[in-house]
Amino acid sequence: MVGGVNPPPPGGKGKNNMAATSLTPHLSFNGACADAFNFYKSVFGGEFAAFFHYDGQGAQGYEVFELQPTPAHLGGLPETLGESDAPVFSPDGRWLVMFSREHTAMVRGTDTSFEEVWDPEDDTPVLVDWAELFVQKLPGADIDRVRVGVEIPRSRDYEQEVSQWATYEAVRFDSADVVTLVMPWGEELRVPLPATGAVTSHGYTGG
Image (tube, rainbow, N blue to C red; front, side):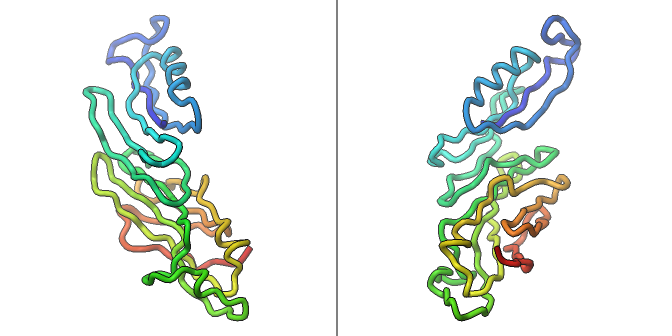
């Protein structure tokens, strides 16, 4: 779960009759998030603003709810067939994004996997989509799915290299409308939002 903590109403008092201070963090826990937020609530007062829920298997995906001033479903991201880290809010809370690695890297625009075109003797580059960026503008806009590709030689070892690429802790916002994806080889791709079309890395150096 991920959520925020709202302050008491204007003019209200927080814990121990102290003046209320606005606190609206976006935090992510891979465990007892509800327990953590209940602790924060007991310290700071106020109510929860939003939650993600993920069942550990991806079957329910992530959902965002606003609890104040009235309960409302703001949006959510679907389950993925690949591997992904927790979703990330933009600094102003208008965008929700998730960077997910595909189980099978596919040659862009085809139904052919990279494994099928792999040739240890051929260094000809091929454009392969290996991940996907899920983007939703809150509240409740349609989800855009942005293919993330890279040009790599056909000779690269799929099992020992390509299949090991990951997207954990590889997405951040540099501004409210620009998300940066960090490639496994260190290159950074800046994606302006709303995203239009696929994005491609041309800076692969191997390894």
